[in-house]
Image (spheres, one colour):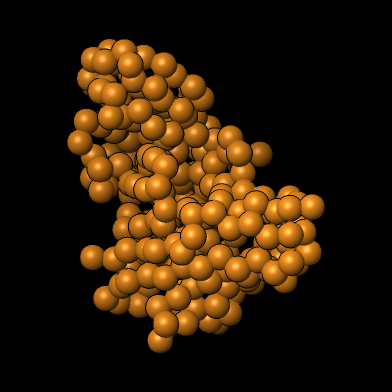
Length: 113
Length: 114
């Protein structure tokens, strides 16, 4: 089954404790991205990757890191989480251009205390 | 800069009634436009998209949207609401051929009353 998976689905952590949210897709997609969803703000793009070893900042990259060492995986790293990073995070992937469908993962709800 | 405005954070309709969710965009170049649906505890699912083909776009689950350049609008409609349509709906716009320039609206929560 074609899908985007994220782990963990729920995470409660404390300020400053490094964490990684994994994202994996099984569709051989070139493009992957991370969004955060906050009430009243919709989704905002954090980082995106056009291909292996090619990543770039989205609209809200501060406090986040990503890597794309393999085509299928695109982990999101919070080196020193802060309470303002409490949010719902989505990973997404697509084959290439906007003519292709963008598929979203199920989301990771992160709470930073 | 481009932006997306969804009019009405909450919309309530009766089952069988017309669904109309409004979306206006601002973009300096012809955009690509999208509607996504999000069911509780799930990711976003594409309903339909406009990518410079026909201005009336038909999507899944009986939804459609019309791109009106003169009004900078891309409203989502469905003739007859079903209980299963209750969800949050997001309009999005991209100026780029790729998804790296996506902007989402704040979302509209649709409630369907029996």
